[in-house]
Amino acid sequence: DYAPYGTYVVDLSQSQEELWRNVKRIQRQNIKKAEKRKVTVSVSDSRHAEAYRLIKDTFKRSKLPFMGSRSFMDYAEGLGEQGRLLVADGEGALQSCVLYAFSDYCAYAVYGGNLSPQIPGANKLLHWDAICMFKEMGVQRYDFYGARVNPDKGSKQETINAFKRRLGGHLIQGYMWK
Image (cartoon, rainbow, N blue to C red; front, side, top):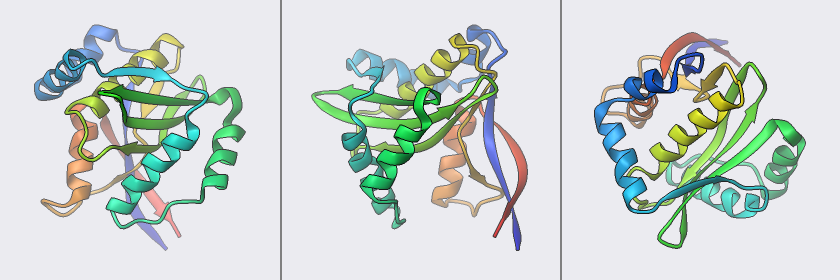
């Protein structure tokens, strides 16, 4: 069986100024607000267990299952030099995190999680900093990793797609097979 599916991708061959202009005004304001509230984004090699809990809690809020801790740790470790965990910290707590798999061709935002509630803009700042970091590394594309095609109006999937689009992503459509 197949179903329409897609992903939102940012072309990192653009200048950083062009990339910033492609981020919608409200998202740029949210990013700046997070920076003013001292949210910091960093690459972490030591916070996978903390990231796992945040990602699992995020999936749980959406009533979705998530893999076990050992499987997540094995996956992250298996990425080796082609994996990065980015974390956004603020007010003494992990606000947001994303585990990336990447090559010269593309960086994929494979698993992410967010504190609820989080400092407004923390997740947007994390993605923006990741876009800049992967561009600087010479990666060609930034892939938000998955999107429903034509989700129902007002649905969570429509909100997630809008988030990716407003950060400069363009929908590439294909199919999912089961």
